[in-house]
Structures are given as C-alpha cells and as structure tokens.
Amino acid sequence: MNSCYKVRACCSTAHCDYVHHSDVIQTINHESSFSFAMMMNEWNTAGVRMKCPQCGQPMFFYPVSYIADPVTFA
Ligand SMILES: [Zn+2]
Image (tube, rainbow, N blue to C red; front, side, top):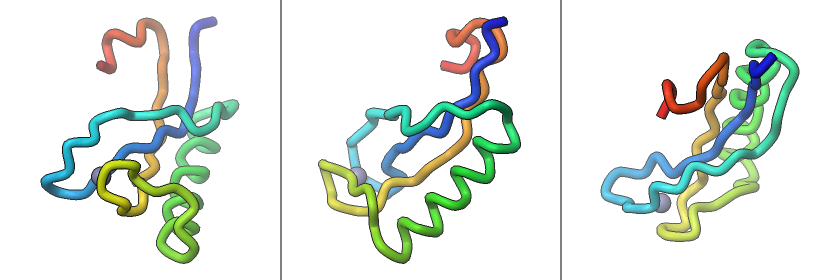
C-alpha cells in the first residue's frame, strides 16, 4: 500500500557540497522509474535540462523505491 516509485535528482560532481536530493517524477513501478532515470540522464548530457544550483553541472537522475518505511532508505 505504501509502495512508491520515484525518480530523484542529485548532484554527482565530486567536491560539490550540494546534497539536496529532489523528487522529479513519480512512476507506477520500478521498471518505469529506472528507465525514466536512464532517459533523463541521456537528455541531460545532450541538452542539460536540470543543473545543480551550486556548481552548475548537470544533475544525476536515479530511481528510488519506497516499499514500506522511507526511513529504511535514508
Ligand atoms: Zn553540484
């Protein structure tokens, strides 16, 4: 019931201290959040749709699954 699949964005640049991980989109299952993350990473290298507010580098997208308690994944 509490299952929740999302794509999140964070900055993956070394030495950048921007640590905020923001939810980008919510999806119906793990497969779609995974492929969404892959797709957005490809778009980002081509067109840079989302930049880190701290260092200006493209954000990195990754899939997240909340199965029961979000605390377990913190
Ligand atoms: Zn950054």
